[in-house]
Image 1 (cartoon, rainbow, N blue to C red):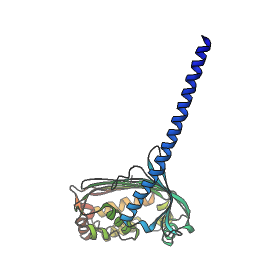
Image 2: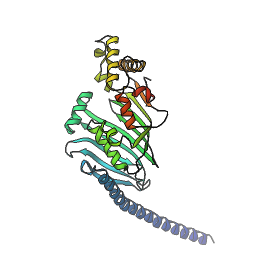
Image 3: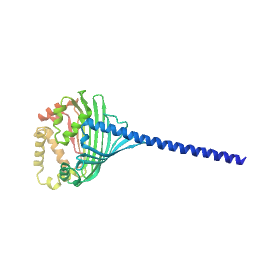
Image 4: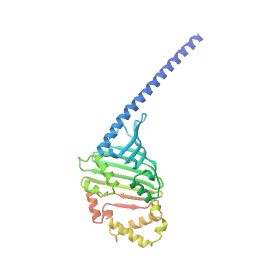
Length: 311
C-alpha cells in the first residue's frame, strides 16, 4: 500500500512538473510575441505621430523597447536636431500608455549626461550662459484632451540649474486645430525664441483658463545674478529698473502698485533665490489675442488676474 502511495505521489509530481514546464514555455512564448509584435506596432504609431507633427527629420532614436508586463514603449538613446550635434540627447523617453492614446500624452524622459562639446552651438551657448559644462536632467509631460478642453502638466529638473513645474488649462475654439500641429508650433516658437508668434497664429482659436508656473532654484539664478552683482547697485535703482522692465513687457505701468509688487518680489528672489511662483487665473477664459492686447496696453498683470510670489 505504501508503494502505491509513493507511486501516485511520484506520478502526480511528474505531471505537475510537466504542466509547469509547459505553462512556463507558453508564458515565455506569449511574452516574446507580445514584445515582438507590440514593439513593431509601437514603432509604427510613434513614427506616424512624428510624421504628423513634422518632427520626424529632427528626432533620431537608436531603438524602441516594449515592456511586455506594463505594455509601455520607450525610445532609447534619442537625439533632437542634428544627429551628430543635437540640441538635446535623451537616454530614454517612455510613453506611459499603450496603445498610444493620441492625442493624449503621458511621457517621462531622462536627459542623457551630455558634455557641452557634444551638443549644438545653440545649446552650448545656453549652457555657458547658465554656467554648466555638463547637461543632465529628467522630466515629464502629460496632456489630456476632453472635447475642447486641454489640460497639460510639464515638469523639468536640470542638475545644478533648477526645477520647473508648469500646469495649464486651455480651450480649443477651432475644431480644425490638430493637436500635433499645435504642439509642434508651440515647440518651434519657443525653440526659435519667438513665443509672440502664438497669438498671431492661434489668437482667436485658443482660450486660457489657467496657468501655473513654479521655479525652484538649484544654481541658475545664483550664476546669472551673483550676490556681488546684486550688491553693486542700490535697492532703489534696482526696483526702478525692474519696474521699467514690467512696463516694457506689458505687465503694468512702471509707476503702478502692480509693478511695485512685481519688482519687490523679484528683487527678494534674486537676493535669496529659492522658489518663485507665477499664476494666471482670469475670472473667465481669455483668448491669446486678448492677452496680447492687454500686454500692448500695459495691463496684463492686473486684468488677467496674474499673481507673483516668492515662496
